[in-house]
Image (cartoon, rainbow, N blue to C red; front, top):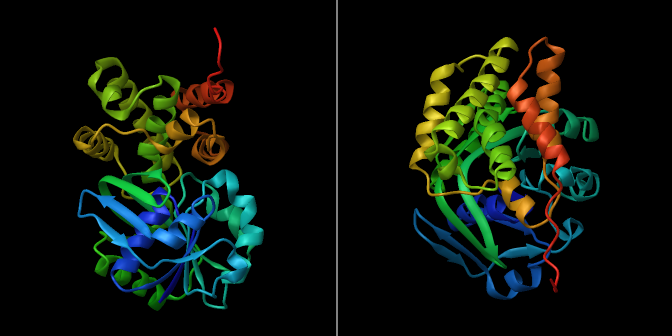
Amino acid sequence: MKYGVIGTGAIGGFYGGKLAKSGQEVHFLLHRDYDYVKSNGLQIDSCDGSFHLDAVNAYHRTADMPVCDVVLVCLKTINNGLLQELLPPLLGPKTIVVLIQNGIGVEADVQRMFPDTALVAGLAFICSAKTEPGRVSHQCYGSINFGNYSCKDSQCLNALLTDFTQAGVQAALVNYEEARWKKAVWNMPFNGMTVALNTQTDLLLKHPSTRKLIYEQMLEVIHAAQHLGVENIDESFADKMIQMTDAMTPYSPSMKLDFDFHRPMEIEYLYSRPLEIAHNAGFHMPKLEMLEALLRFSPSPAPPKGGV
Protein backbone atom coordinates (compact mmCIF):
# COMPACT_ATOMS: atom_id res chain seq x y z
CA MET A 1 0.00 0.00 0.00
CA LYS A 2 0.99 3.64 -0.44
CA TYR A 3 1.44 5.53 2.83
CA GLY A 4 1.35 9.22 3.67
CA VAL A 5 2.69 10.66 6.93
CA ILE A 6 1.37 13.99 8.22
CA GLY A 7 3.70 15.10 10.98
CA THR A 8 7.15 13.59 10.58
CA GLY A 9 8.25 13.92 14.19
CA ALA A 10 9.06 11.42 16.90
CA ILE A 11 6.09 9.19 16.03
CA GLY A 12 5.58 9.75 12.31
CA GLY A 13 9.31 9.62 11.65
CA PHE A 14 9.67 6.33 13.49
CA TYR A 15 6.69 4.40 12.10
CA GLY A 16 6.96 5.94 8.64
CA GLY A 17 10.69 5.23 8.67
CA LYS A 18 10.14 1.59 9.63
CA LEU A 19 7.59 1.14 6.85
CA ALA A 20 9.89 2.78 4.29
CA LYS A 21 12.84 0.65 5.40
CA SER A 22 10.74 -2.49 4.89
CA GLY A 23 10.07 -1.51 1.29
CA GLN A 24 6.71 0.28 1.53
CA GLU A 25 6.15 3.46 -0.48
CA VAL A 26 5.95 6.23 2.10
CA HIS A 27 5.47 9.96 1.51
CA PHE A 28 6.44 12.31 4.34
CA LEU A 29 5.11 15.79 5.06
CA LEU A 30 7.74 17.90 6.82
CA HIS A 31 7.83 21.42 8.13
CA ARG A 32 10.95 22.93 9.68
CA ASP A 33 13.37 20.24 8.56
CA TYR A 34 12.04 19.72 5.02
CA ASP A 35 15.17 21.08 3.34
CA TYR A 36 17.46 19.07 5.61
CA VAL A 37 15.66 15.76 5.08
CA LYS A 38 15.31 16.37 1.36
CA SER A 39 19.09 16.75 1.13
CA ASN A 40 20.32 14.43 3.88
CA GLY A 41 17.64 11.81 4.46
CA LEU A 42 16.11 10.62 7.73
CA GLN A 43 18.06 9.03 10.60
CA ILE A 44 16.34 6.71 13.09
CA ASP A 45 18.43 6.03 16.20
CA SER A 46 16.68 3.01 17.68
CA CYS A 47 17.18 0.62 20.56
CA ASP A 48 16.00 -2.07 18.14
CA GLY A 49 18.62 -1.18 15.53
CA SER A 50 19.41 2.20 13.99
CA PHE A 51 19.05 2.93 10.30
CA HIS A 52 19.20 5.75 7.78
CA LEU A 53 16.88 6.46 4.87
CA ASP A 54 19.01 8.02 2.17
CA ALA A 55 16.23 8.86 -0.29
CA VAL A 56 13.08 10.20 1.36
CA ASN A 57 9.84 11.14 -0.40
CA ALA A 58 9.76 14.51 1.37
CA TYR A 59 7.18 17.25 0.81
CA HIS A 60 6.51 20.70 2.16
CA ARG A 61 2.85 20.71 1.09
CA THR A 62 0.27 17.94 0.93
CA ALA A 63 -0.93 19.49 -2.34
CA ASP A 64 2.22 18.00 -3.90
CA MET A 65 1.72 14.53 -2.39
CA PRO A 66 -0.09 11.64 -4.11
CA VAL A 67 -3.38 10.10 -3.04
CA CYS A 68 -2.54 7.42 -0.47
CA ASP A 69 -4.08 4.15 0.67
CA VAL A 70 -3.25 4.94 4.29
CA VAL A 71 -2.52 8.31 5.90
CA LEU A 72 -0.82 8.32 9.31
CA VAL A 73 -1.76 11.54 11.12
CA CYS A 74 0.93 12.17 13.73
CA LEU A 75 0.25 15.82 14.49
CA LYS A 76 -0.42 17.02 18.01
CA THR A 77 -4.18 17.27 18.47
CA ILE A 78 -3.95 21.02 19.05
CA ASN A 79 -3.17 21.24 15.31
CA ASN A 80 -6.11 19.15 14.11
CA GLY A 81 -7.80 22.23 12.69
CA LEU A 82 -5.13 22.10 9.97
CA LEU A 83 -6.44 18.75 8.77
CA GLN A 84 -9.23 20.44 6.81
CA GLU A 85 -6.51 21.80 4.52
CA LEU A 86 -3.87 19.08 4.84
CA LEU A 87 -5.88 15.88 4.37
CA PRO A 88 -8.00 16.33 1.20
CA PRO A 89 -5.14 16.04 -1.36
CA LEU A 90 -4.25 12.61 0.08
CA LEU A 91 -7.76 11.16 0.21
CA GLY A 92 -9.18 8.71 -2.26
CA PRO A 93 -12.49 6.85 -2.00
CA LYS A 94 -10.86 3.99 -0.03
CA THR A 95 -8.20 5.84 1.96
CA ILE A 96 -7.85 4.89 5.62
CA VAL A 97 -6.78 7.69 7.98
CA VAL A 98 -4.98 6.45 11.10
CA LEU A 99 -4.95 9.01 13.90
CA ILE A 100 -1.81 8.22 15.93
CA GLN A 101 -2.68 10.85 18.50
CA ASN A 102 -3.21 11.09 22.23
CA GLY A 103 -6.53 11.44 23.98
CA ILE A 104 -10.20 10.53 23.81
CA GLY A 105 -12.76 12.04 21.46
CA VAL A 106 -10.30 12.71 18.64
CA GLU A 107 -11.96 10.49 16.04
CA ALA A 108 -15.44 11.91 16.67
CA ASP A 109 -14.24 15.45 15.93
CA VAL A 110 -12.22 14.46 12.85
CA GLN A 111 -15.15 12.41 11.53
CA ARG A 112 -17.30 15.54 11.63
CA MET A 113 -14.72 17.22 9.38
CA PHE A 114 -14.58 14.23 7.02
CA PRO A 115 -17.90 12.34 7.28
CA ASP A 116 -17.12 9.88 4.48
CA THR A 117 -13.53 9.04 5.46
CA ALA A 118 -12.58 5.76 7.13
CA LEU A 119 -10.91 6.46 10.48
CA VAL A 120 -8.78 4.20 12.66
CA ALA A 121 -7.22 5.05 16.02
CA GLY A 122 -3.51 4.34 16.35
CA LEU A 123 -2.37 3.84 19.95
CA ALA A 124 1.41 3.89 20.12
CA PHE A 125 3.24 2.51 23.15
CA ILE A 126 6.64 4.00 22.52
CA CYS A 127 9.35 6.21 24.00
CA SER A 128 10.57 8.33 21.14
CA ALA A 129 11.70 11.91 20.57
CA LYS A 130 12.79 14.07 17.68
CA THR A 131 16.14 15.35 18.87
CA GLU A 132 17.28 17.46 15.90
CA PRO A 133 16.41 18.00 12.23
CA GLY A 134 16.07 14.72 10.40
CA ARG A 135 16.83 12.57 13.46
CA VAL A 136 14.48 10.50 15.63
CA SER A 137 15.62 8.91 18.88
CA HIS A 138 13.69 5.72 19.69
CA GLN A 139 14.50 4.80 23.28
CA CYS A 140 12.29 1.81 24.06
CA TYR A 141 9.07 -0.07 23.29
CA GLY A 142 7.40 0.74 19.96
CA SER A 143 4.27 -1.40 19.62
CA ILE A 144 1.03 0.00 18.23
CA ASN A 145 -2.62 -1.00 18.57
CA PHE A 146 -5.20 -0.16 15.92
CA GLY A 147 -8.78 0.50 16.98
CA ASN A 148 -11.29 0.62 14.15
CA TYR A 149 -13.56 3.66 14.38
CA SER A 150 -15.33 3.79 11.00
CA CYS A 151 -13.46 1.64 8.50
CA LYS A 152 -15.70 -0.92 6.75
CA ASP A 153 -12.91 -2.53 4.69
CA SER A 154 -11.55 -5.40 6.80
CA GLN A 155 -9.19 -6.44 4.00
CA CYS A 156 -7.40 -3.07 4.10
CA LEU A 157 -7.26 -3.18 7.89
CA ASN A 158 -5.61 -6.57 7.78
CA ALA A 159 -3.18 -5.33 5.13
CA LEU A 160 -2.30 -2.39 7.41
CA LEU A 161 -1.59 -4.80 10.26
CA THR A 162 0.52 -7.01 8.00
CA ASP A 163 2.59 -4.09 6.71
CA PHE A 164 3.43 -2.90 10.23
CA THR A 165 4.25 -6.41 11.38
CA GLN A 166 6.52 -7.04 8.40
CA ALA A 167 8.21 -3.71 9.13
CA GLY A 168 9.25 -5.07 12.52
CA VAL A 169 6.57 -3.27 14.55
CA GLN A 170 4.51 -5.25 17.02
CA ALA A 171 0.93 -4.42 16.03
CA ALA A 172 -2.57 -5.62 16.87
CA LEU A 173 -6.18 -4.90 15.99
CA VAL A 174 -8.19 -4.16 19.14
CA ASN A 175 -11.59 -2.79 20.09
CA TYR A 176 -11.68 0.98 19.56
CA GLU A 177 -13.01 2.03 22.97
CA GLU A 178 -10.74 -0.46 24.70
CA ALA A 179 -7.72 0.90 22.84
CA ARG A 180 -8.39 4.55 23.61
CA TRP A 181 -9.12 4.03 27.31
CA LYS A 182 -6.20 1.67 27.85
CA LYS A 183 -3.86 4.29 26.42
CA ALA A 184 -5.45 6.87 28.73
CA VAL A 185 -4.53 4.72 31.74
CA TRP A 186 -0.88 5.64 31.11
CA ASN A 187 -1.30 9.01 29.44
CA MET A 188 -3.51 10.78 31.95
CA PRO A 189 -1.33 10.22 35.03
CA PHE A 190 2.15 10.49 33.51
CA ASN A 191 1.76 13.34 31.03
CA GLY A 192 0.25 15.73 33.55
CA MET A 193 2.24 14.67 36.59
CA THR A 194 5.60 15.14 34.86
CA VAL A 195 4.51 18.69 34.03
CA ALA A 196 2.99 19.50 37.42
CA LEU A 197 6.05 18.26 39.32
CA ASN A 198 8.66 19.10 36.65
CA THR A 199 10.12 15.61 36.58
CA GLN A 200 10.39 12.40 34.56
CA THR A 201 8.56 9.08 34.71
CA ASP A 202 11.21 7.19 36.66
CA LEU A 203 11.35 9.67 39.52
CA LEU A 204 7.56 9.66 39.88
CA LEU A 205 7.67 5.92 40.50
CA LYS A 206 10.74 5.95 42.73
CA HIS A 207 9.05 8.14 45.34
CA PRO A 208 6.44 6.19 47.37
CA SER A 209 3.95 9.07 47.57
CA THR A 210 3.88 9.85 43.88
CA ARG A 211 3.98 6.17 42.93
CA LYS A 212 0.82 5.67 45.01
CA LEU A 213 -0.80 8.74 43.45
CA ILE A 214 0.02 7.59 39.91
CA TYR A 215 -1.52 4.20 40.67
CA GLU A 216 -4.67 5.78 42.13
CA GLN A 217 -5.02 7.99 39.04
CA MET A 218 -4.70 4.91 36.82
CA LEU A 219 -7.48 3.23 38.79
CA GLU A 220 -9.69 6.29 38.24
CA VAL A 221 -9.29 5.88 34.47
CA ILE A 222 -9.91 2.12 34.65
CA HIS A 223 -13.03 2.51 36.78
CA ALA A 224 -14.33 5.26 34.45
CA ALA A 225 -13.82 2.97 31.47
CA GLN A 226 -15.61 0.12 33.24
CA HIS A 227 -18.47 2.47 34.13
CA LEU A 228 -18.74 3.35 30.42
CA GLY A 229 -18.93 -0.33 29.49
CA VAL A 230 -15.41 -0.77 28.13
CA GLU A 231 -14.42 -4.44 28.20
CA ASN A 232 -11.10 -6.20 28.85
CA ILE A 233 -9.81 -3.60 31.29
CA ASP A 234 -9.46 -4.12 35.04
CA GLU A 235 -7.16 -3.14 37.89
CA SER A 236 -4.50 -5.61 36.76
CA PHE A 237 -3.89 -3.34 33.77
CA ALA A 238 -2.68 -0.61 36.15
CA ASP A 239 -0.15 -3.07 37.58
CA LYS A 240 0.99 -3.89 34.05
CA MET A 241 1.45 -0.21 33.19
CA ILE A 242 3.41 0.44 36.38
CA GLN A 243 5.68 -2.54 35.69
CA MET A 244 6.18 -1.40 32.08
CA THR A 245 7.14 2.10 33.21
CA ASP A 246 9.51 0.75 35.85
CA ALA A 247 11.39 -1.00 33.04
CA MET A 248 11.49 2.09 30.81
CA THR A 249 14.42 4.43 30.47
CA PRO A 250 13.81 7.77 32.27
CA TYR A 251 11.32 9.51 30.01
CA SER A 252 9.67 12.88 29.45
CA PRO A 253 6.24 12.33 27.86
CA SER A 254 5.05 14.50 24.98
CA MET A 255 3.19 16.96 27.23
CA LYS A 256 6.31 17.52 29.34
CA LEU A 257 8.35 18.22 26.20
CA ASP A 258 5.69 20.65 25.00
CA PHE A 259 5.80 22.40 28.37
CA ASP A 260 9.60 22.55 28.40
CA PHE A 261 9.75 23.96 24.87
CA HIS A 262 7.00 26.52 25.49
CA ARG A 263 4.45 24.88 23.20
CA PRO A 264 0.70 24.53 23.86
CA MET A 265 -0.20 21.37 25.74
CA GLU A 266 -2.79 18.79 24.62
CA ILE A 267 -5.08 19.29 27.61
CA GLU A 268 -8.39 19.08 25.72
CA TYR A 269 -8.27 15.48 24.48
CA LEU A 270 -5.93 14.13 27.16
CA TYR A 271 -7.95 15.48 30.10
CA SER A 272 -11.00 17.66 29.50
CA ARG A 273 -12.78 15.39 27.03
CA PRO A 274 -12.43 12.08 28.92
CA LEU A 275 -13.32 13.81 32.19
CA GLU A 276 -16.41 15.28 30.52
CA ILE A 277 -17.44 11.93 29.01
CA ALA A 278 -17.10 10.20 32.38
CA HIS A 279 -18.90 13.03 34.19
CA ASN A 280 -21.83 12.91 31.74
CA ALA A 281 -22.10 9.18 32.46
CA GLY A 282 -22.23 9.83 36.20
CA PHE A 283 -18.62 8.99 37.08
CA HIS A 284 -16.06 11.37 38.57
CA MET A 285 -12.26 11.23 38.59
CA PRO A 286 -11.39 13.74 41.35
CA LYS A 287 -7.61 13.28 41.33
CA LEU A 288 -7.42 13.73 37.57
CA GLU A 289 -9.88 16.63 37.69
CA MET A 290 -7.48 18.35 40.08
CA LEU A 291 -4.55 17.55 37.78
CA GLU A 292 -6.40 19.06 34.83
CA ALA A 293 -7.03 22.23 36.87
CA LEU A 294 -3.31 22.47 37.68
CA LEU A 295 -2.42 22.09 34.00
CA ARG A 296 -4.96 24.74 33.00
CA PHE A 297 -3.49 27.09 35.58
CA SER A 298 0.17 26.56 34.73
CA PRO A 299 1.28 28.15 31.47
CA SER A 300 4.42 26.91 29.79
CA PRO A 301 7.42 28.68 31.36
CA ALA A 302 8.69 31.68 29.49
CA PRO A 303 12.09 31.35 27.82
CA PRO A 304 14.86 32.75 30.01
CA LYS A 305 15.81 36.37 29.43
CA GLY A 306 19.15 38.03 29.82
CA GLY A 307 20.02 40.11 32.85
CA VAL A 308 19.36 39.61 36.52
